Image (cartoon, rainbow, N blue to C red; front, side):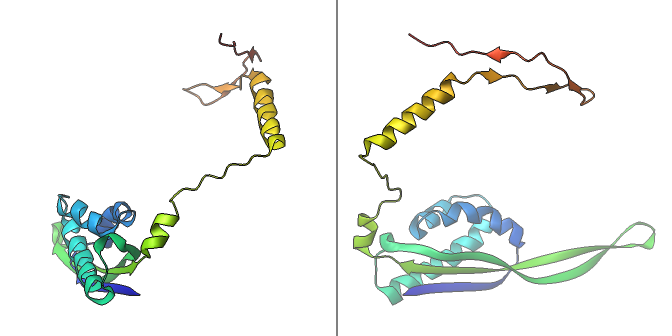
Length: 174
């Protein structure tokens, strides 16, 4: 099940709203509302209203708590463009464009048991000793391999300067 809100013809450029979108997408809807409420930018107000509308729709239709909700779709699309002209010097017309945007928010409910059972990052440990030996041997080979200095470029001309090939050895600690 999902709940959505689609707000059309918001009088702000889509580029300005998308700037806040990447931070908000990673959060849960309740956290996103809190974050946007204290963000001192104009697009934050419009995004706040859209998310709040979708959240209230989700509470009514899905009958779940705010903690179990997550964003499925959160996009900002281009709306209409009003092309206007302003008077310029020497009788010329200077064009400018008023851009509008559409904000689409879709919220879904996740299962309470599934959220606890699957962690965000799972770590898989193997008990196979042969794999562990090969990994340690490879790291030893990489550490033992001497580093070679690469040719450099001069700052002013960008030409390559021949640098004497020298090997850099690492000293072992302890």
